[in-house]
Structure formats: structure tokens, C-alpha cells
Image 1 (cartoon, rainbow, N blue to C red):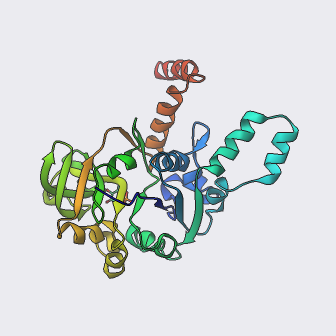
Image 2 (cartoon, rainbow, N blue to C red):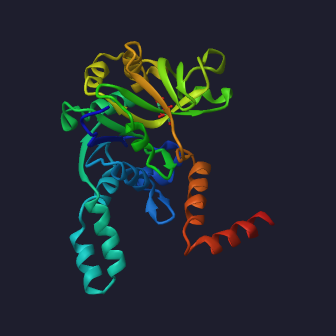
Length: 290
Ligand code: G1P
């Protein structure tokens, strides 16, 4: 069992969000709302619920609105206090209190592995989590926390989900020996294989717990699939040493990296809100009958 709880989490958020243009010309895609909160907040909340205390955003130019969301806004707080808007005041203060937030820059878009590597100085020599903002997971136990359960120091754990074979080209894919119906000793990892080359249909979703020596693996990783430095390729080196576990998590995953996926997540979370449920159900019904 791990003796050292995982306290730091890296959130690569430097992507341009081209699938959401034109809105992402001036608004970071991570700030697009699901109901009344930026989509990145759902992922940060998951991490904090699992005991994460330090959040490292790997950002790029144009992402100030994302980082500012997690920092105090004294003018707004003073206004809400003066006008007696106490619920809104405590909501915005709670977001700021969630965790310590650090932002580092990725100046060249060289891939996910390269993005994560930019957090090396901020995280330092400790095991850490990585959460990808496009994957929102609604679960009773935070998905990243499920990856921490039963983990040994020095082990990497990646979240797995079975996908249709035709979809393997969208994911990193893992193969290995099943230790239980939900736990795989990972032996091979391939980034975005064609269906005919995929070693299995177990896809990585955007949750990882990684040992501190991942930094040196990332530094040595050359460009791979798509000409990018891939996180999957760095972790594959650990898999070759028998140090990677794949965990099939409990929970529902939403891919908010495309417009329909974001709408689906919005409807899901709106339907979970007692104050919105009836109105949204009525809306869906009315739209479906057009
Ligand atoms: C990234 C990873 C991939 C993983 C996926 C999950 O790909 O490189 O291994 O399966 O996230 O969402 P991306 O979606 O950034 O292309």
C-alpha cells in the first residue's frame, strides 16, 4: 500500500479548443459552462474530493480567465457583500478555498507528454495525479480517488474504459493480464492505434496517478503518434517494468471535448439539480416533439 498520499495534480489546459471555435477565440474551452459552472471546475472538484491539495494548471496564452476563476476577486466579493448577495458570495469564495493553484506555461504545443512535463518544477519529486479536463466523470467515489485505492508507491495507475473497437484510434489503449474484472496488470500501451492494430479495447480515459520518476521518462520520450510527445509512451516504459495498473472505474464518463458531448454533460448535470430538473425535462420533451 502507498505510504505517501498523492497531494499534487497536473491539469494540462493549454489546448486551443479549435473544436469550439468561434467561441474559443476569446474564451478558454475549459471555462465553457456546464449549467452554471465552468467545465474544468467539475474535474478540480473531483480531485479535491480525493485529497488533492495542489493544482498545477499547464496553460498557454489566452487562458487567464481559467486561472482567474480559481483566484480571489476582491472587487466582486465587496460588491456581493455590500448588496447582500450572500449565497453567490460564499459560492465564489468556496471555489477559491478549494486548493492552492499554480499556473505554468507550455509555450510550444508539442503534445500531452510535453505539457505534463512543464509541471515538473512545480510538482517536484513526488508521485502526482494528472486529470484531463475534457473527461468529466460523474461518480459516487471520485474517479481519481478510485485510482489511489490499493496503489503501491512507485506504481502508475491509469483509468480504463471499454470502448467499441472502431473507436480505439481516439485513445491510448492498454493490454495486459486481468487481476480482477476491474484491474489490469498493464503490459503494453499504444497511443491511438487503428482498430486492426489495437491490442485490446480497453481505452485510457483522462485520469492518471504517476510516480515521480515519470519526469525523467517524459524527458527522454521522443515524438510518437501524431508527431507529438505522448504521455502514453512515457507510461509504457513503466509498463515494461510491470509498474502500471489499469483500473476500470465506477462512474459515468462524459467527453466534453466536442459540442454534442458538452451538451450531453450539461443536460445530465441539469437533470441532477432539484431546482432545474422539472424545467429541463419539460424542455427536452418539448424539443423532442418538434
Ligand atoms: C489523450 C491521451 C489518450 C487518452 C485520451 C482520453 O488523448 O493521449 O491516451 O486515451 O486523452 O481522453 P486526446 O484526447 O488528448 O487526444
